[in-house]
Image (tube, rainbow, N blue to C red; front, top):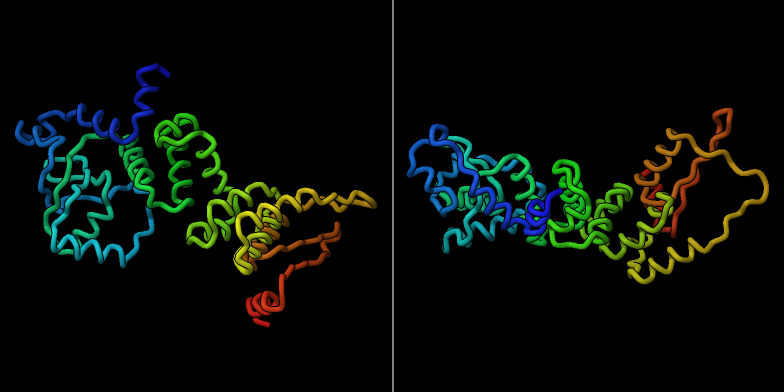
Length: 300
């Protein structure tokens, strides 16, 4: 990678936007020179001509927050323009600002102020991801998914990604590791039930069943990050019993069933299967209330 390209990686969204302005389309594709001169300036664009960004990483928009922004737009107008790219003479695609676009539609606006940029698909994806990440309004799972998309779809290494979003490599790695946690834990992180500190402690546990077990204790007992770290250390210190005949390792299919059951019941589940196909299912509960919760799920 050349020094010129590496410098561009570290400049983030502003660099991508500036670079995209310099790549202007042909006049024959978009019309007159006056239309060309609108590139990079703020223009009033018909909302009906704007398509949503297919690369938008954010999937969850709070309806109450949108309604509040719409009320503000009705009174004050839209203060911060959105950013779009021109597809043809009368069609645009959103680069960043979907929340503002949605709220403007709710407010009944027919036109919206917008910066017009030119960008290819990779620039579109990077702009949308970086713009959302830099706003710091994504939850940790959305950030992790955004990071993973940048790595997969923009062919970036973790170090390059860190330069793009102004975060060190260890921070990027910690976010990406969240995606290896069981789905039930990821959902709790997404919904704010479990903090990033809790999640980092859970990542240190190799066994998904144990992760889910600790996660359930966090939810039901309100464990602090420090308590979870202590619990993880205690589990890691526990000696492994090697006396007697060791059980056969679970097959991939049985391990998948065990993990799915643990996720379903939000607690530790163990499956033991003999070579004849017989076995047992062991479901751990933390208290009488926890037992009743599991029994209700079993329609007992």
